[in-house]
Amino acid sequence: MNATNTANAYKRQQILTASPAELTLMLYNGAIRFITESIQAIEKKDINKAHTANIKAQKIVRELMLATDMKQEMSEKWILIDEYILHCLVQGNIKKDKRQLEEAKKFLLEFRDAWSQAMKQVRVDKSKDGATDKVVERQMQA
Image 1: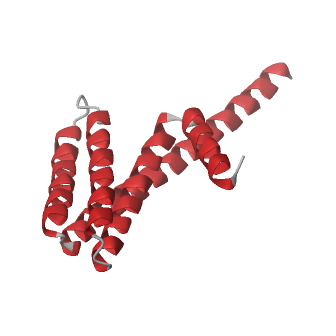
Image 2 (image 1 turned 180 degrees about the vertical axis):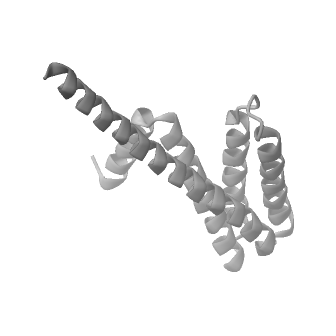
């Protein structure tokens, strides 16, 4: 098995064992990576590569939109921002406009960072709850 196959197998396993929150973080990271690739390709005048990377980013943003729980109060506003991000990606692709792509990337970076912080806070809260449960168990056994 060569290095590429090993990396692909590792990535596949990582995706298969990830929680929904981790998958969302992976999607944000992927969209950001593809936008960066698209910008770099535009700078190198590689229009085909810019287009391909941009389309991948668009697909990820659409996937994030589909995953949005519309029962939540903030979801309607969140979807509007996602639609704006998608608009920037489409316009950036049509016009090969790096400013539009940077705008989309800026929002996705902010969302990704907020998501990552929320995941960390959930872990902290769960570990506190687990520690509290253990203290209660010890007190009950005493």
